[in-house]
Length: 428
Image (cartoon, rainbow, N blue to C red; front, top):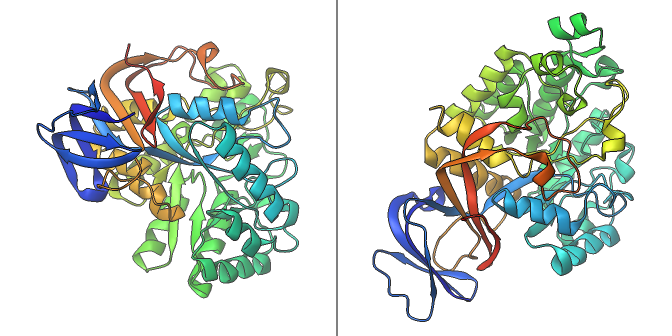
């Protein structure tokens, strides 16, 4: 189907475009942009009063397949992504088995092509089985389609191994994504170490556990010339370290999650130990949250990523210190960003769109994130005035572990096209 998206506000940071225009889609690609484009044989989609943006990218998603299809599958994960306004997702390697070899990468790629409604880009392991002992088959995985390497929730404790990874991945210009956590400091911790953890009687994770590893990674990136990407950055000091590293020309990037800029550790107390407020890194203090907002506003942050982590009810309905870390994010990320960043006056629309398009596309070297003529017709349409009331029971994801039940958020994705095909239509 060919489409003519008529009369929307086209915001494409890659092309420095922000204007009311039509967008013509032919044969799955962007064919023309302009005013008063004739429909010819294309079907007209009236998007007047709406925002037409390049397809949004979530660069940190746990799709759980293969191995934990009880938590998420290609079908449910991609449906959640499409409903959240995402046309592309990069999936973390902590599957069962881990994505540490060419065969697993090829399996993920083939299953995604057959069953996913959005683009799926696999991330491979840094080390075999994420154990941090020896490098995984990175070169072979690159041939099969990985866009980055990471041991995800397993921080690379060995500085020697991290150095090797940063040096080796330079061959492929591949980013090394690290979950920064000094395990000897964080061991046994279940929330941020501070006032609320003391009052609640829960063992805390100090900010230093993240910051020490961020500093180490940045030093090694400077030493090797490799590309380091700090996943789900959560503290004020971590933000300062990345900002300083960028100023020095170190090849460093970072992402921030909506839950870290929308919530603090007070949510654990206010919710009465709700395990949906348990994530890693944990929700931090107000000072940290404000620092994240500052980094988003001043350009230090490269991308907003959901860290979508589905867990079944039986897993989350345990005591707080026994439940797994992680919450859902695909279906609320964009709405939270519109509500808490754009409508709150923290960023303008171009900056917000760039955090979901040019930012992650640049980090992962993806040929996505633009509406330039000839590019793939991956398109996200936003209604800036749509009020979305979060209902976790209506999520497309298999799971329901999110702390936003009943939240009313201003702004939401209403239409998602992947390769010119409508994969989500929420206009009604």
